[in-house]
Structure formats: C-alpha cells, structure tokens
Amino acid sequence: MKLSTRSRYGTRALLDLARHEAEAPVQLKDIARRQRISLAYLEHIIAPLVGAGIVRSLRGRRGGLKLTRRPERIRLSEVVHLLEGNATPVDCIAEPGCCDRTPYCAVRDIWSEMQQAIDDTLGAITLRELMERQKTKESGGPARPETPGIAQPGQK
Image (cartoon, rainbow, N blue to C red; front, side):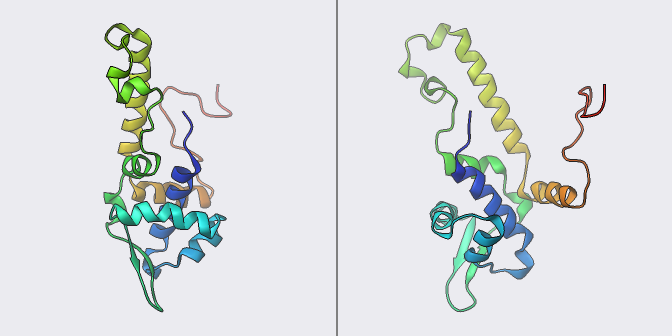
C-alpha cells in the first residue's frame, strides 16, 4: 500500500503547523517554503483539513492557519483517512459484497489483518508524538524507537 502525496504532504504540513503553533496563525506560504511543497498544491491539501475542522483559516493582515485542537488530540489515522479517502489495500475490505469469494477467502483475511495493523499504528500516533519524534531526529537522537527482539542497524 502506498500513501499519496496528499497524505504525506498533509501530515508534514500539520507537523509544521503544530511546531510553529506559538507563532500562530502560521502563513501557508511559510509552511510551503519550509516543507518544500508547492503553495498551490498545499492549498488543495489544506482545504479538506479546514473543512473537517482540524485547521482553522484566519483571514486578514495577520491571518493564517491555526490548529483547532491541541496536537495530542489529533491522530494520524484521522488525517490519513481524511486525505486518502478509502485507503484499503483491496476493494473487498471496504465493500465485502463486491466479491462473491469474500465469505471463504483466506487471502482477504490477510489483507484485512494488514489494514487493521495500519489503522492501529496510525491511530496510536498523535501529532504531539510526531512532534517529539521530529525533535529527537533533529537533535541527533535515535532514528526510530527500538523494537524489542528486533536487531537495530549495527546489532546482531
């Protein structure tokens, strides 16, 4: 499964907005510059986030964007589902009736388990946690959290 640039760029834009929330409202052009995303494309990505009430757009001379909720209350699952729409690996997960093999298809079970693992992972991560991970990366800390039982690079 491959996420579109809408989800990848939208998540980066929200991360940028959260990291600069003290400067709120944040100008969209500043996010575009820092994230190296086309301003025109970023406008299209931000629109559904505004429509869903995750981001608020303030007009005027001192206008810009502002999160409507604290970063710890925004889950990545919400963002990805909003920007991707139906992001299931196969159609029969979202629409079991589309295939007459659904009731006895073992392969569909695997795709369903994979989708559940993705949903669980994205649902467990908040924008606040993503901010902390970014801060750790920028300070030269570990690239990713260590997973017990799995050798990290350089380990055997």
